[in-house]
Length: 303
Image (cartoon, rainbow, N blue to C red; front, top):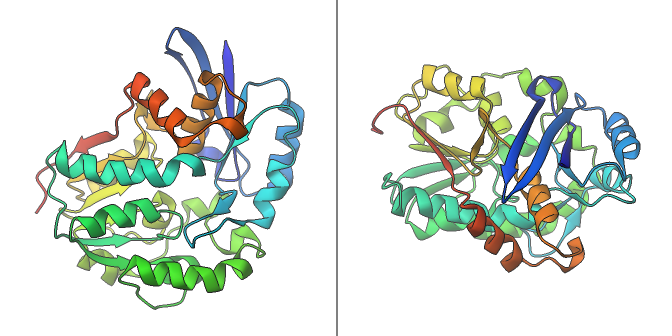
């Protein structure tokens, strides 16, 4: 049996373990959170290095490429360096193209009306593909990179501006402690009643679920939510708040959607190549063989 372990600096409350049969292979997939403790994440990876088939690195991206080049997060580099024998991936190689396809799939295959809608993408610098798909569909965009990531109340309305600011700010941002930029550990359970006007304005809430959830108002009636990793409790909570439709980038596995880091780790174990030699075409050929599709939950009709 192949074993994949996602080591996340997110909350331990989201830990999960499941066994799947994929292309005739039994695969155990496990998520281990560290409540924001980077030292503990490094320790776990060192303990399991060489004993598992692949690591996913969750709760943190190794690098950002949305501004035109790779900017590596200092804290993520420390975590990744702990894996000496076992391949470690963070999902970044899949994210942009996969999320572009999810937006188009939602509109074209699921026939969920997206074109021309008002869309809030909570942070786009790590989801350029998602923003590109929305813009191609003629959506009215608000990008919350400065608002949600840095606490600066400035709206951005085009990917061109997201990329311009990224080239200026990313060399500085990647040197900061990651916990300053993104909710990790117990912060993932904390909510703040700010930024509600952006939620009220939007027809579609999109992007990283932890950012969406942290500032989400009590009611999001009629909203379409397009996001990444959710648990069964998250799915129920969105329904209680009035969401009309939930679409997740990755499919449901035993009651939850795992992150792209887990999906990439799965693919690495199935593709017979060293990780540095795996191409985007290799990934998407394997995704096609697995018939991986987004998860769609319909609570009611969108307004």
